[in-house]
Image 1 (cartoon, rainbow, N blue to C red):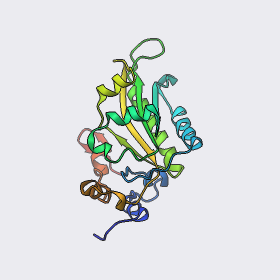
Image 2 (cartoon, rainbow, N blue to C red):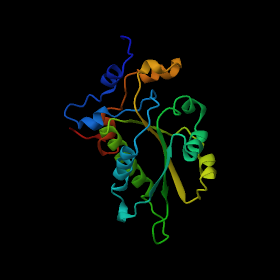
Image 3 (spheres, one colour):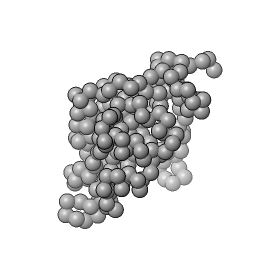
Length: 206
């Protein structure tokens, strides 16, 4: 494979090959090469508004987002909970966001769809960021207990992912060899026949 060093080259490689797919969704992927350019307050507000207007069961809107702009105490707290591999790159993006869901509804009853709704809001947030020319990377690699302790979250708060948002940099800016190999590796997905079914063992004929 030819050497891949530029943003344009890696984005072409990572583009989802589904013809006719919405370009914003086809273009979205999760880089680790980020510039230290700040995210403007205007763009950050639009990103969060996109999450605010996501759909939710019974309009409960159970999602909450802890927003850490680089240099803030919130950013430092979120960053401190990341595993070492993620700390190697996630200090550069302008914003770190930790999403969580309230597992009880407005009447105090269990909300069985709270985590699903958090996911819907997160996808809206990420898609808006992509539309604004920003990139995002969602991370499961963080210490959940440390995050709950840092932000005084209770047992009825379910954590989602930490989402890094910022401006993409050239893959050549990554010095760690393992990380750079991941950055320029082709994307892989399960075939549609494995995930679109009409019964447990019957693929959808499409």
